Image (tube, rainbow, N blue to C red; front, side, top):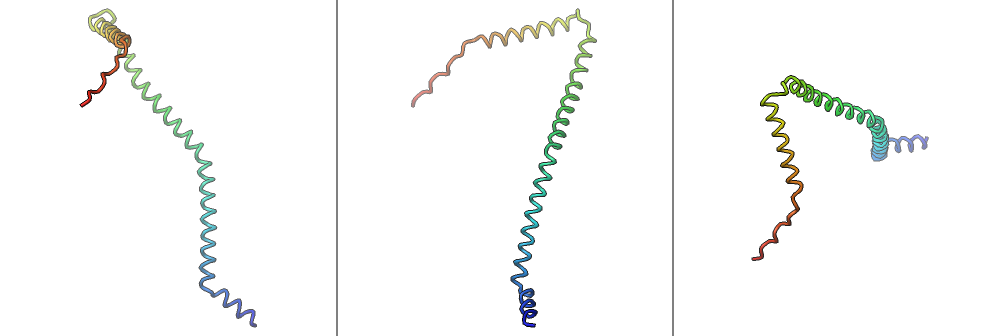
Amino acid sequence: MSENVATEAASSDPLKNVADAMETALQAAKDGASDARASVERSLPVLGRFVSRLVYTTSYSLSYGVVFPTVFLARSIPTENAMVNGLVDGAKAARDAIDQIKSRPMVEPPAPLES
């Protein structure tokens, strides 16, 4: 009979109940963290493929949407007229200007003035 009284006293000890509850909560948190980590490790490759596919599809659509109409428009303009000749000459002048800029020697900036 004294064993039942001691067991009842131990099981009704509020500090023991709180400690048991905290230990159970801590274990559940550890298990949840490891489950979350495993879930993230499984989902990262899937997320990486999704982002890669999204970037590829967006880039493809954008380039197709820009290049196709530009080439279509360029092909529809007659080649021997003033506008085309002006565009060609302007592009050539721009390339020549860039070549001149690239061929200039590097000039060091002047030293700062001392006060």
